[in-house]
View 1 (cartoon, rainbow, N blue to C red):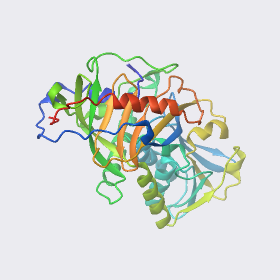
View 2: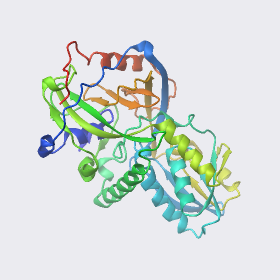
View 3: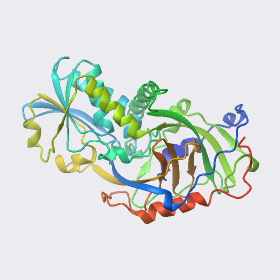
Length: 387
């Protein structure tokens, strides 16, 4: 079992690539462009809350207030990554509740889970009315990094039974399949990018967990075939100051484009978007639909009094876009992740007290420190080729 480190799912998967992966045939390529890592290029800082449940996402139905409630929330740091496969499980509960295609259902919440659940229900023939207090970009899902990390804070080790892991793998594979259908579109909602995993002491050195975090299972090998393992690089094959580097390939979501496309598709297929804030369980009874899917994420803590949810604060910052920078960076053990998105270079760094923290106030000093760590990675006289 592994302790959580910054976006540990992605880094752990890359660090555990099998020996034969190093022999893959990679064509020579130009050196990666230098990132202009200056704090005065920080143009936005966003904070969101990851809804973590020790037992994994809640996907279950109940009868309440004379209607069916399908609960679909609690995906930790894997909301975007698992959304489509998870929505297919929620759809099975909808279809099993006696609601027929053509009937209108309600979906509560406009984040990654709410949007994909609404689209999945529409594709199955249901009419959908989406209720939400906020819409993108004012939802927690808008502050996500955009890396495909289906095993990020999704369950604790003690609850990861063989049956649970099998179900998770099925969701991950189903989601991955749907994400592939969004490749190549003009707005670039989903793209593949190369990246570099960097380390000072090698990739097998254990990393400490953060304050108050539980043990998480190592799920990476179950979907190893969906993550190209890449190649270890010699010192002269990369331009970074770190002595150890491995090149990988990573699925990236350009979240603003993805959200806009989902909303446009939802409206095109007759979906209705209603601004409404549900404050107490009784508010479900006031909805005209006889089935509602509760995709409120961390909001379920207050709406339902769900004590099984733990808020996990996440902060991302954006540097001014550099189109020539098309690679990701994960600096192992240094609390630094960079994602090349079309809306800017996303810089993510965790705080020591983020687990159990629902404070939405941005901490600029935290992001500025991450940018300075990023700047220190680029050394004078960098290699002219990257493998």
